[in-house]
Amino acid sequence: MLSYQHAYHAGNFADVQKHLTLYAVADYLLRKKTAITYIDTHAGRGLYPLNTKETQRLQEYREGIWPLWKASEQLTDPLLRGWLTTLLTAQPHASELTHYPGSPWWLSQALREQDRLTLFELHPGEHEHLSSQLLSPQAQRIYGDGLTGLSTLIPVVTPRLCVLIDPSYERKAEYLEVVDAVTYSLAKARHAVLLVWYPLLPAGHHHSLLDGLKESGIRKIWRSELQRHAPSEQSHGMYGSGMLVINPPWGLDERLAAAMAHITPLLGSDSDYRSEWLVGE
Ligand code: SAM
Image (cartoon, rainbow, N blue to C red; front, side, top):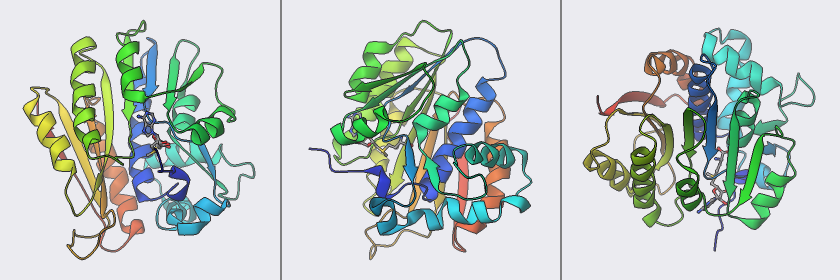
């Protein structure tokens, strides 16, 4: 039984880190003409109006995309400018931030004629929302399990593959299921670029994901973590957000570091962004 709904968290600090990273990776991939298949294993709704009762309940976007939007004229970093200009195109009224786009939207807007996109969503209500979104005609939406679906789709017919794995981690077993999915995918598509999001929680469950990947023999695993504050045993909530990029495009680390240096202070005075190789070449 799935209970997580991303609408309660849309546009928060973790979405900022995740979608900026996704945008930056796609931006690199688009420099070559050869076709790309994108697969989003845990798609969510695709687009989140900020005025819904779910998003308004916690208003997490107020400590995520909101301060960036407000400061956008001062954010001159080229990657950030591109990302925020693209975000503008998701708004029905350009001057107002009323909608926050999820990963299906970010991927859909990057599609060229030669590219493909498959979106998996297992929650029936979330899938219904996703089905109603206006996305590129090349975007295929599947109601089903994303990790099983991924294994049935690869190898893909296009020369390049980019996968986003962004589970809700409602079950602890998901951390190791992600390790298996990544290992399987790279065995079938060695050069695929894989992005994996994970939460930083005081219980530290993400260590099983990181340790599992370190032990898998996979190389070129880059990770970044954005912490809102230091972990504390007193708080149960998510204190930070992590992204892994396996087979990252050359230069991604520096480009994201430059962009994140501008936005991290806007996400809270204790915020901290770091990146490193989890496993090098
Ligand atoms: N990737 C989205 C974005 O960036 O906008 C957010 C995804 S949200 C963190 C996780 C989503 O995965 C939820 O909508 C949930 O219903 C869905 N989900 C959970 N288990 C799944 C599974 N096994 N296969 C596909 N989707 C699943």
